[in-house]
Image 1 (cartoon, rainbow, N blue to C red):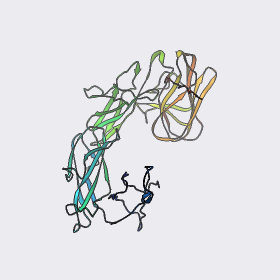
Image 2 (tube, rainbow, N blue to C red):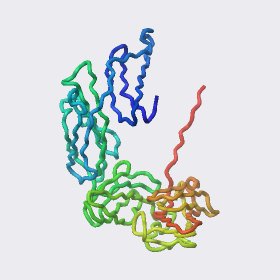
Image 3 (tube, one colour):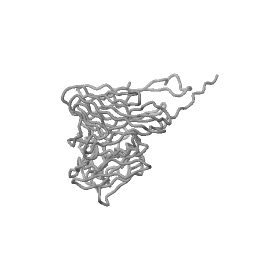
Image 4 (cartoon, rainbow, N blue to C red):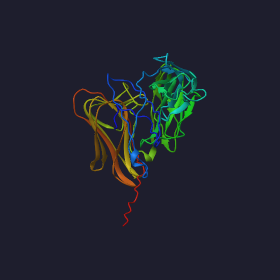
Length: 393
């Protein structure tokens, strides 16, 4: 039986012996069904015991209830976490200990702080060395036992209680290239200061800033140029999120005026297309299509491998993007409305060492809308690898 509403104990691979599994759950009604699974994994098990299970001393008990004390937000440094328990029937049960775990959400793996049967299993607090821009999740599960431990009475666990804390006063995000791949070793800084950090293996970064308004910049990397300085506001105890995309420049770039910082120079607009400072992904401006409009640009390139169009957008209406060559559109995509800035790429399919015209065209046919587009570029696409399939008789 597999279902989100069915909880199983850990598997106990014990043959022909009494075990004492225990499980806690939160009741959603007045009834509960207990499942017992017996699995025969050995070929020589006696027929008298084949797939047979016995139940004795079965108990339904009120589980111990944990309280986890953890703020929703905190500043970098030492963060105190504490927990306690309520035993529903203290005349019979007493506290055995707590299982306590935490994880850094950017990593995802649970780390054990203590287990209920450890020598420190009844500890009730922990001090976390918290890093700026991180989200940490803690969970605690109490166990109750009869007296100092009764072999005839199974110890009973409670339900995991879980809370998360955001470590604020930071700007967080990823550094990517124009193909959407994470870049490690890129410097991210508060412009004009010594406050810096470096992106990690997957491109993730966390820049400790304190609260306030800051201009965030990235350094150039491996021939890629960063976006313009971007102003962000970090609330007290909170975080601001900003992804930074580095793109090719010079002869490796197929478009000009990629960021629409002041005007639409280099582009051919029709209808309501304009440069706007009302919203942007990075820098201070972006392209806005507020009514039926189209805008395009084409240029000549030489020897570009796998030309790829990429950009960011935020929109309350659907619109179309096309990849152009000298003959017209070679690829297109219709994009739906999104409330947050979203990265998009469009493969041209033009292959290796392409020389000729490339371009981009954005089209919206509709009524009043707010379609923002930023950081538009055409550069070399990611290398594609194919593995052979070998058939053997």
